[in-house]
Amino acid sequence: MSDPYNSGAGGSPPPLPASRPASAAVPAQRPRMAPATLGDTMVTTAFALPGYRVVENLGIVRGIVVRSRSVVGNFIGGLQTLFGGNITIYTELCEQARADTYRDMVAHARQLRANAIIGMRYDATEVMAGLTEVLCYGTAVVVEAVVEPAEG
Image 1: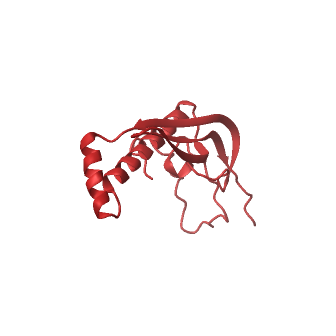
Image 2 (image 1 turned 180 degrees about the vertical axis):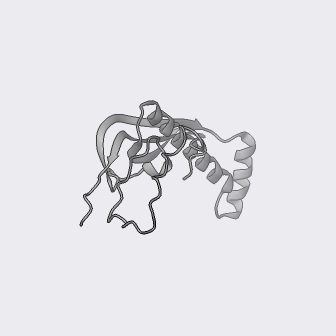
Image 3 (image 1 turned 90 degrees about the vertical axis):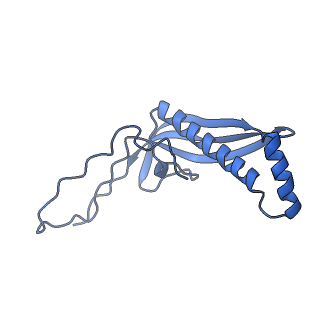
């Protein structure tokens, strides 16, 4: 899922390494730098990021929204149920709620100066008839690249 609020935010990407002459040998493995800012590639449902190690646990971060569909939306959704299949008006509502909670979770992690989120999950609960709470949460961490020595 793309984070529309990540585009251009948080500064520019790290500079590219200086180029070397074509005759220079290519190292067996180039060291990877941990990103200075939190982007979508550093958010995972796993509890580890391959190639990185957690150096600081900043705690739980979350985004939460409570949504309801309008009277018009409920009417259209009701008509769609008569024909069966995907109820698109509710699908769009759910996807928008997930995107909003994801965006809020990432913003919360950035406030803590995290450069990754691990163990990310979504949860939804019906608060009352027609009202649904959507929660996106994970663990904000600071990671650094694990650099293995080049063979040679």
